[in-house]
Amino acid sequence: MNYRKVTLGALRGVALAAAMINFALSPARADDGALQAIKSAGVLRVGVTGDYLPYSFKGPDGVLVGADVNMAKDLAATLGVKAEFVPTTWKTLLDDFKAGKFDMAAGGVTITPERAEAGDFSIPHDHDGKRPIARCTDKNKFTTVEAIDQQSVHVVVNPGGTNERFAREHFVKAQMAVWPDNRTIFEQIAENKADVMVTDGVEVELQAARHPGVLCPVAVSEPFTHFDKAYLLRRDPALKQAVDAWMSDAISSGKWKGFLGAAMH
Image 1: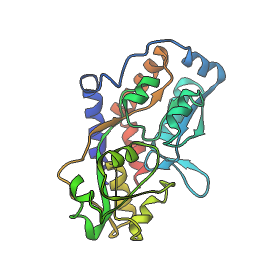
Image 2: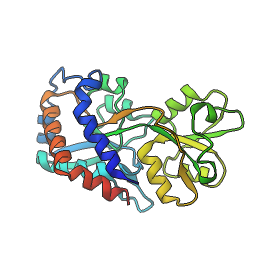
Image 3: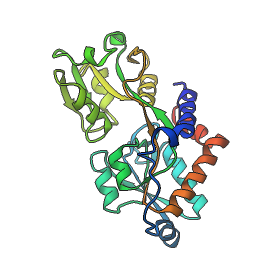
């Protein structure tokens, strides 16, 4: 994986965020005292799914790793508190956030209008797009949405997030299977139980690197979609200002690039 491409995309996302996604990066409206509450409690509660490398991933040993895990710990230290990670799923992430189960959602969270309605997004750390991954023998086969959306094609998707939304919006003829565990979903393709999955480009590249000669990025001319990733925060002007300042520094200093690069290997 050439994570430099992803990082450059993140920098472009930061530079263009105000112009391109004003609807998503809406200013904090009502000060609910989130930052003060976090500091008073001494804890920053961070919701993560733990199933999405390189952002957050919990392996068989139960240890949570990933670029956003390290970033959350660094943010907590900057705020003078400790990070506490709260398990969630892509299907329940927004409801869990609205229920106040955590102060911040991280781990590869895509900016969407629905999520932006529930809280404030930080400035983006990544710019990405949906791309297909398949067995290497099929890397030149599923190069368009139309080529994938055929009755003979078996599409696999993880539940509840933007991957499932994309699949249900675009694949009406293909046979679709929902695999419940994103940590093992790529084995379905490797073991010939499914043909293709459409997911974020960073995940495509990482999983292809983890399955050399077996799984490959499909040779698309460009991603099917374009979007930014950021952290979803409780709506509080002081919290957003603090997180944006910290994020800007992490990107410009190379800290984010270092965390992402380490998580890609």
